[in-house]
Image (cartoon, rainbow, N blue to C red; front, side, top):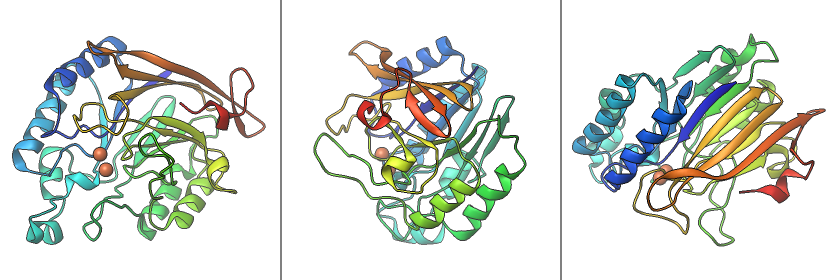
Length: 283
Ligand SMILES: [Fe+2]
Ligand SMILES: [Fe+2]
């Protein structure tokens, strides 16, 4: 069993320190093989906000946890225009990670992160040709029974934001990204940005998008909510065809299992454990 804690949208600078403590407590209790952080480490990409994020990562490291992170749109300075265009991710690289395409080859899962944050848009994301080539190359030689996990900040699909019918934007150059994901046989797509937890089947969202399970994390520690309490995901990968997602939701005093679902893939299609269509079982 491979355990992944999937955090997103920490937003240091607009965070609740109490929740940060409780996230760490839960991670220590779970002892995951990997902590994935799918972007928006900071609120405004300020040095002191990155320093707080860095201290959080240092504490995770000292407690023995491996971390894989990707930047979010909030990790690029917004108002400092010179820095935004000339050195958008310098602070991210200094305080979070030098690499923008981190890769962890775990014994029972391969996890790759790709940067979708860009200077030219305020909050949207995109992928480029070099990145989709890298996705294909990285996963090309993996055995089919080893789950492939791709992490981005921006979801590759248009997915719900908040409580209403509003959908967020899909990543820019979506068609190119989805072709690479299908070719590379990606099993799990992990993202954040919308501050809303949900799970979907790629092919239900875009016809022909392949067989990946699409897993969205809420915001773990931000105080700026969109109609949903803070949460993060605990993902148990038993095999490339057997994955459980347990939403760890803030209940006012700590994070606990609020919604757990097991997904089984048969003949290429993900189903919930009881056989219901996945689209009806969104969190
Ligand atoms: Fe965010
Ligand atoms: Fe974001």
